[in-house]
Amino acid sequence: MYTKKSINKAILTLMSLCFFLASFSYASTSNKIGINYGRLGNNLPSPNESIEYLRSMKAGLVKIYDANPEVLKLLSGTKLRVSVMVTNEQISTIASDQSNANKWVQENVIPYYPKTQIRFILVGNEVFTNNDQKMWIDLVPAMRKIKNSLISQNIHNIKVGTPIAMDALQSTFPPSNGKFRSDIPNQVMISLLNFLNGTKSFFFLDVYPYFPWSKDPINMSLDYALLKSGGVTYKDPNSGLIYSNLLDQMLDSVVFAMRKLGFDDINMAVAETGWPNGGDVDEVGANVHNAATYNRNLVKKMTSNPPLGTPARPKIAIPTFIFSLYDENQKPGPGTERHWGLLHTDGRPIYEVDLTGRRAVNEYPVLPEPMNNRPYKGKIWCTVASNVSLSTMELGWALDFACGQGKGICDALAPGSMCYEPVSIVSHASYAFSSYWAKFKSSSGASCYFNGLAVQTTTDPSHGSCNFPSVLL
Ligand SMILES: *[C@@H]1O[C@H](CO)[C@@H](O)[C@H](O)[C@H]1NC(C)=O
Ligand SMILES: *[C@@H]1O[C@H](CO)[C@@H](O)[C@H](O)[C@H]1NC(C)=O
Ligand SMILES: *[C@@H]1O[C@H](CO)[C@@H](O)[C@H](O)[C@H]1NC(C)=O
Ligand SMILES: *[C@@H]1O[C@H](CO)[C@@H](O)[C@H](O)[C@H]1NC(C)=O
Image (tube, rainbow, N blue to C red):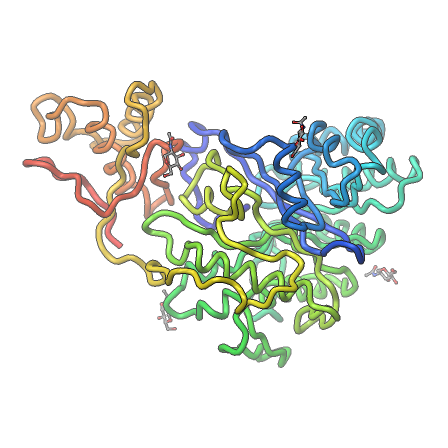
């Protein structure tokens, strides 16, 4: 998923990166809600167990971020409809030659289909969030070639799409102002829309009301972001349409952006949405209470019969994939990145949500009131996490990395300086993390993460005459 905060590039090179999305289709027997099954964790249940959990949750669809053979084989014979993905790295090769697309379909679809009910092939993930402009140009040719392969195999009920993040839009507010980014060549966007329209596919959107709300939690109503009904409404001054939640507003900004390019018939699908169940001290509103509220309201909205649609597209169903099945502990970036899950890694729900949409929102057990729905005010430090194994070599590397990011970051750690004592790697690394983060958080959006070695704390680790730098919120 995308985060608006730019993550320090140096950090990205140090750590592995990762990201994702979703898909769906409907049937009368099972439900319309899909789940994103991301696997960037080192503590996740096996694919076999995971599919069992998805079935017991009554998910209608599952979306994966690749075409993993084990997962696709295990899905065979289940009722789950499946969305598979061509990875970003594969796009240009597939775009360059029809035979490469045929090979991809031959290897990743034909062995499993139709026993595994593949319904969507998503080509790439948040391609316009990536700076690789060759990939932008190659995207639609790759999608066309995959579609050609399917047709030549006489497969007509698999739709081809591509998940796009909200950062592909230049303006989103008011929704009638929705417009795609001007650095994305018009021709690329028009050929994408032409393809989606001509194949009756969907515009797959990764859309998180959490991000705009958390940027302005004082002015923006939390209930509006959490899809609670009966709260504030917003009237778009140009269209006259009345909005009762932020998700509709965001979806319609894309509808208007497409309309400006002459396309008014392409249906929307939500490839990813959700709300973080936890996060760092500086991440407002990330808690189980809000995550449960958002996803329960979302399911109610998206499963309603007849469909609700959005103000600009009333009564049109929007296939929706929730992000994500699990908290994924190997996603880099801010703490929320590792807290989008519905299930603990032993399969127990982090909070209950009835994916069929039958359960009324007030029929769930009451969850504790959250403490972090207002922004934290005060100092925060970034120190070594308490569960880090002291013998880990990574801690030394992370210490060197932090100190190497600029003049003065670790001056206080030199022999004889204020923070030299105690001479321990944990103490030095904690100082270095705090110093690094205090220096770069506001300028480059650096996170207090260090590959899981660091955590934010509101407890001042300063000692004696050694003062740890802090971030002041
Ligand atoms: C998959 O899980 C089921 C029960 O959830 C179990 O009976 C079966 O043995 C498992 N298969 C494998 C290959 O692990
Ligand atoms: C809230 O709105 C006021 C008035 O429009 C504005 O000055 C302020 O910057 C906004 N706050 C945030 C956090 O954006
Ligand atoms: C979209 O497709 C429909 C046919 O399904 C066609 O009538 C319409 O002209 C297309 N729109 C554009 C802008 O090409
Ligand atoms: C430490 O615990 C946190 C959760 O409290 C977890 O996210 C992180 O992955 C753990 N780190 C290690 C090295 O086990």
